[in-house]
Length: 349
Image 1: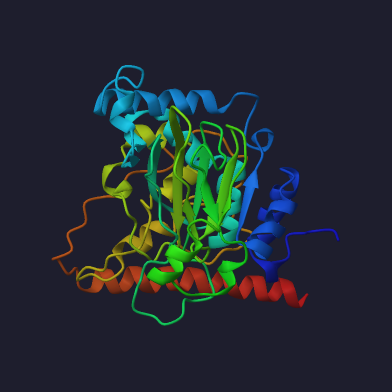
Image 2: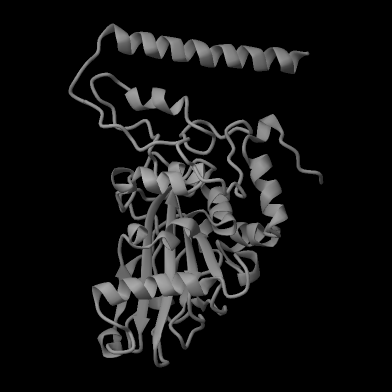
C-alpha cells in the first residue's frame, strides 16, 4: 500500500517511508518474526565503510592496551567490552545516527529514543563467551512489558561466524517476555543460532530477544562496535548529556543532540520541569514529546547543527522561582492548546 504521513500513525509514517528507501522492509519483518535481523553492508554505507570504524576502534585499543599486532596474547580467552568510546574519535559520533542502524532502532523504540552507550567488543581466541541472556535487566517483574525499552545495533568490523566467536540468538524468544534462568542459559548456550555475516554487516535486536555468543576458535581478534538506544524515560548507561560539548553538537546533525538527551525534561527541581520548557523551542528530533509527523527528524538529515542546538544549561535545582515558573508553564500550555485547537479545526474542515 501507499504509505503516507497519516496523523493517526504519528512519526511512524515518515520513518517507515525512509526505511523503505533504505530497502529495510525485510529487516522489519525479521525483527517482528524472530526478534533480530542482519543488515547487509551495502545498506549501511559504501563498499568498505567499516574500515574507518575499525581503524577508530584499533586506535582506542592502542591507547588503552597497546598495539594489537604486538600484544595479541593479551586477548587470549578474553571477551572484553571497551566502555565509553564516544569522545575518543569523531568517527564514533557519526555512526550513532547511521540511517539504517538508527532507523531500525527507532522502529523498535520510537523516534525520540536516546543513546545509552557506545562500546567496542573485542574477543580473542579461546573459551571466553557471553552467556545467553535478555537485555531487559530488571530482575523484579515476573513478565516483561510488551514494548522494547532498549535496542542494540552491533556493527561487525571483522567477519562473524560460529568459529570466529559470533553473537548468537534464539529466534522467536522475544515473544516469551521474560528473562533467562541459569539452567536455560546453560541449556541454550550451544544450541543458539550463530550469526554468519561478513565484516561491514550489522545485527539489530530489541531487549526481549535471548542472545549470547560462541567462543572464538580461530586466531586473531573479533571486533564490533555496539550502539545501544533506549526510550528516554530510562537511565542511560553512559553520561552523554553531561559530557557532550557544543563543538560536538555543532559538527553533527540535530538528531545527534536528541541522542545526547540535552533537551530531556528530567530530573525535576524545585521549579518543576524547567528543562521541559526549553525543549518546546528545540528542533524536531531533539525532544521527548509525542512522536508526530511535525516532530519527525529525517534519517537523511546530515546538515551540521551549527548553533541550532545547545548543551544543557546548569540548572539550579534547589531554587524555586515562584510565579515565574507558574507563568511560563501557563503560557507554554496555552500555546500547545492553541495548536491543538487549530489542528482540530483543520481536521473538521
